[in-house]
Image (cartoon, rainbow, N blue to C red; front, side):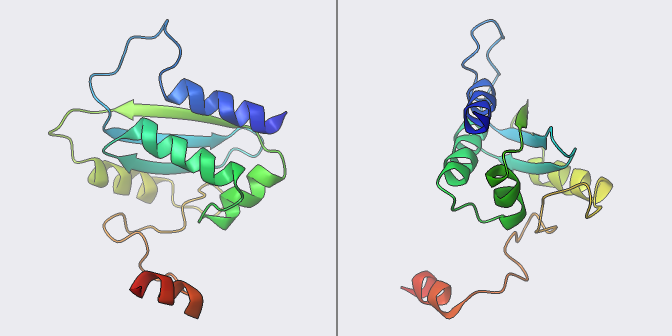
Length: 135
């Protein structure tokens, strides 16, 4: 049942609700809110619907790169998605960085990478992961 609720949040973020006005574009920011514990994940993308869909696909497949978000999903937490669409001139990485800095408390954010220009900076890779990257 919870995974269906996750799917509903994904569908709403993708603009499947025809009663809402279509966004001017697909680029912007998105907030994935955990309604169970109040935490959130902040992200940005040139194609928000596609990126949100990828998050939920990874969560359902139990292969999301953010282990904290994955564990909460596996425990049955309920999520909501809030897309924030922007125009071409908006520095979405800068806005994302500012939001992460504003809410940077371990008990509030799921975000692991705090550097939006290098999101994998500081990641500890296994030998197997390194081999895949270099292949």
